[in-house]
Image (cartoon, helix red, strand yellow):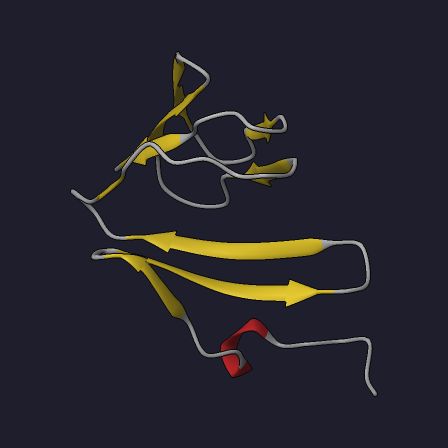
Length: 89
C-alpha cells in the first residue's frame, strides 16, 4: 500500500450539480478536495463531525453557522461539529 495518492487518479463524486469532491481517508481522518464551478452553490447542510478546509484557488463566499465570509486563496475555515455550512462561487 502506498501512502501517496495523486488526486487526478481519484474519481470525483458529485455533491450537487456544479460541485464535486475527491476523498482521501485513513482510520481517523477524511480529506476532501472539493471543486465548485463558477456561479454554483452548495446549499446549507450539516456534518455529524468536525471538518476544516482551505481555499486553494479562486474566490468563494462561504457561510458557517450563520457567519458569511468572502474567501480568497489560502483562507482556512473550520466547521465545528454539527454546524451548517454553505458556499457559493
